[in-house]
Length: 105
Image (cartoon, rainbow, N blue to C red; front, side, top):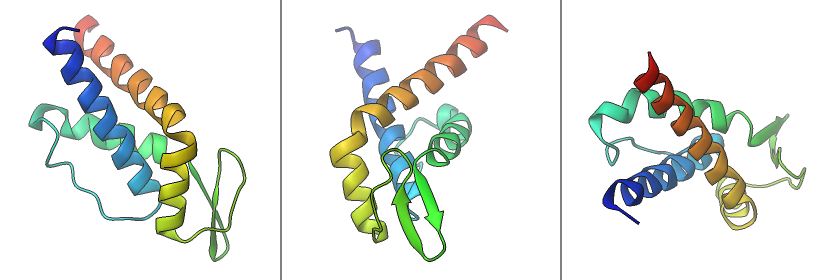
């Protein structure tokens, strides 16, 4: 793998984790991302986060498999342990689409 591919994998992994944290209502920071990607990363994180959690009255449930109820931390751990590959693929696809649009417009 070349260094560009390694950087992409690292950035996608960070975005996936941040999206899970955002979806669960936990604190997160974009400080570890390159400054040029913070604004698009925020949009990607919001889009992915909206697909992960079902807020059912006072409870949190996993939107991907319906399990729950969870605490915020419990839901974070569930999504990381069970659905991380899926979230990673979502983040990768969203970031690749953004980079493609940036390159081709």
